[in-house]
Length: 244
Ligand code: SF4
Image (cartoon, rainbow, N blue to C red; front, side, top):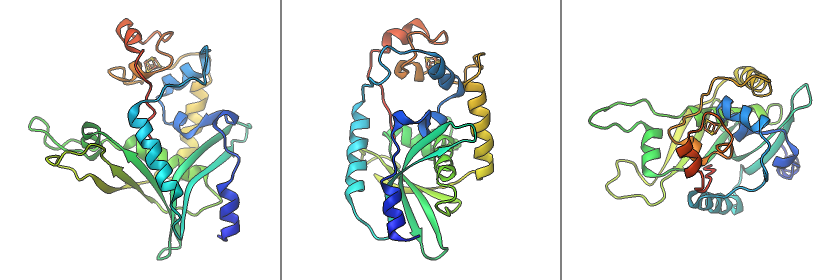
């Protein structure tokens, strides 16, 4: 792909408010997305952002400013479904892999110590070999590949650049590492998106698939959602986080 074409792509006109859905929306629990489609918030654009998210933004901005040969950074794009629904998103980076003539998707993730251990499947005495919890990241990156279909030939393995802010020397994990994920086939993502939006746009609420143990406290629909408990509604004065 020529550099002019890449430059054109890098200034695509993606703006979240111009799309019906973002890649992040498609990774939400279906019930939460249903709430999003059926709830009028007083000020939908107001979103408080947590400190971790601010650090995340700074890290992304730092990498965005780096100019590296063979790397496309912060690539935004919008794809339209046959019914006109627009889905947009921004991938952190695409690296050209000369050895296989394909692009490789990459994403920077900042995770606290606890979340990083869950992500990597670090065990405890009680549960020495837990399964790494990587489904959400696998889905997110697979949707990015779907988004760029026809523009970039992207290989099946993607990489997460995992950074642990405030890393402790005794942690079993390093402060920084690269974690490889297998992407889901594009046809699987086609089916996933179609099914997800059919349910999320329907009149009947789906069964709740949110992890209520922690999500409701940070959810903008917590005040009206019937699944959210009173305690969660009270605690929802906390900052929303939008960890990348
Ligand atoms: S308040 Fe809780 S149950 Fe309701 S949509 Fe948000 S995360 Fe899901």
